[in-house]
Amino acid sequence: YDNRDGKIWMDGQMVEWRDAQVHVLTHALHYASSVFEGERAYNGKIFLSHEHSKRLHFSAGQLDFEIPWTAEEIDAAKDAVLKANGFTNAYVRAVAWRGAGPDMGVASKRNPVRLSIAAWEWGNYYGDAKMKGAKLDIAKWKRPSPETEPSFAKAAGLYMICTMAKHAAEAKGCSDAMMFDYRGYVAEATGANIFFVKDGEVHTPLPDCFLNGLTRQTVIKLLKEKGVTVHERHIEPGELEGFEQCWLTGTAAEITPVGQIGDYTFDVGALTRDISETYEKLVRA
Ligand code: PMP
Image (cartoon, rainbow, N blue to C red; front, side):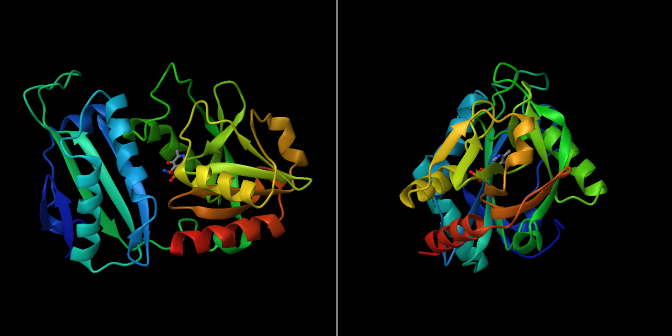
């Protein structure tokens, strides 16, 4: 997969896709000193590009390193990658990390901070679940406390349990897994936030130990503009039974309806379809 045509921006230069390589003694590979962004371009424009660049900086700060390019420079580099590859609709992946250097221990202050930006065409993250509703497993892993990890950074290390939860879910024929948090409240999926509908009102977990996704924030705003009441609160597992509709939000996932979580089932209802159409229009506007 690494040996193909295409262009990747790496440390200030556009390089061939097959040449965008890193050394095995890269600090990030050993100690997860890495942060990233997932973004989508629609009709040639990256939705919330600058917000993503700022979040990348924020995440790096949480991991105690500074990216040597400003958010504006990162915005321009992302646009350059799209242009160099001839993409108008694509997924964009920026990743910043501590590279190889004199520090081979846990501390990494002397190792250079690297940045790369790649893009590729990526359709529906959950395939045809986007139409008929995704089936979710219940993860055995719990989202840790913010005292245990930098919960609000989009940091590679936080995804270890997500990958394991998603592998376990796929082995059971599910598209993804829903995770509870360390207190037992409903948290999110492995790469997307979660929303529920009951009696015409929306309920979504308070993002107090996981990423408050940009898509989540956009969707809450859109719902409020429609006059829908949105409750951001702690959600108990026992409440799942009473919810009528459910969907996931994320840059990759966009808005994906959920048909089932464990033994609980949900309808792909009118509000799910309505908010999904409104979001699709907004990102393409
Ligand atoms: N939670 C996790 C764990 C994620 O990886 C993502 C995707 N970035 C999200 C939530 C949704 O975030 P966003 O809407 O900003 O893409």
